[in-house]
Image (cartoon, rainbow, N blue to C red):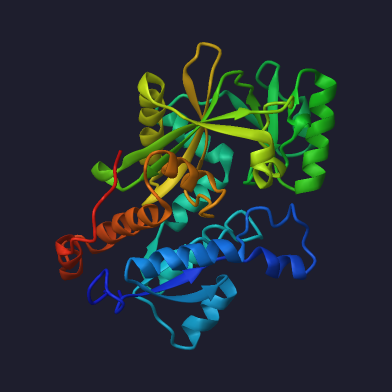
Amino acid sequence: MAVPLSPGTDEMKIGLTYDLCSEYLSLGYSEEDTAELDTTETIEGIEIALHSLGYKTERIGNAKSLMMRLLNGNRWDLVFNICEGIFGDGRESLVPAILDDWQIPYVFSSAATMALTLNKALCKRVVRDAGIPTPDFCLVRNVDDLENSKPEFPLFLKPVMEGSGKGIGEHSLVWTEEEFNTVCRHLLRRYEQPVLVETYLPGREFTVGVCGNGPDARVIGVMEVTFNKEVMEIYSYENKQNYKEVVVYHKVEGEMAEKCGRLALQVWEATGSRDSGRIDMKLNKLGQPEFMEINPLAGLNFKNSDLPILARMNGMNFTQLIDAIMQAALKRIFLGSEAHSVMMKNEQYSYYPT
């Protein structure tokens, strides 16, 4: 394992792995295909924050670039990984698995957690087994499954392995058998993956930011998503790209924040998520929060990604958020090592729980 000389100094080299949206668009992929990928602005924002914290950075790029660099002998003390990937059900696990094989530590969750949480049905089974409330659901793998039993209407339908609201729109909420069959067939054809069928939760929608690991895991903020136009309460990827025109975010405090925070930390532990991420939930008809999905690789655009927004609402600027993420990773990776001791003695390192 490459152990850094002293975290917090420019001697510690941080590699940046990412999938750049513009690269895939230039290859002919659509805006929907690349909805989860990152912009140059996002990479630059992370770099600026890391530099201000005293780290030296090196851009690596996507998984293919990482493999080429490794084979050419390049190494880093730590990799800040935000690669989403674009192919297959293990796409978010690819970079963590490569780095594990080369014994290079990295920020954010492991390959196993990335694979689990990308598949929403598998993740819900793990969460449900841990006793955490989540809407009843079934999986439609092919048209033959349309005849199988399912929860009662109304139902919410979405691809089982997509993020950024891909495949979600006004069609996703169905009330009749005819709508159910039509939407399932469309999603099966368009996304070539199973359709997750869930009991629709009618209540308020929240997202919760978490930072830290094990007993150090802390909620950094709870945010409610409400809509400022006469649109269905469905947060599609189109809405996220133009969120200021469609949604309003509200800081949540008090009893509801505590309920959402407890549920988020339970999910965080059950899924083995690391360092930082975001958990989405909605209220059921009794007004209690239920788990929807978790994003252990939450967007980090300093302007319009949910995690930086909710952190900012709770008094944590973007640099402080990146600092808290780095501290969580360093403590997890180098706990008990000389490197961690240096980190803890350096006054610039301070954790920002709320």
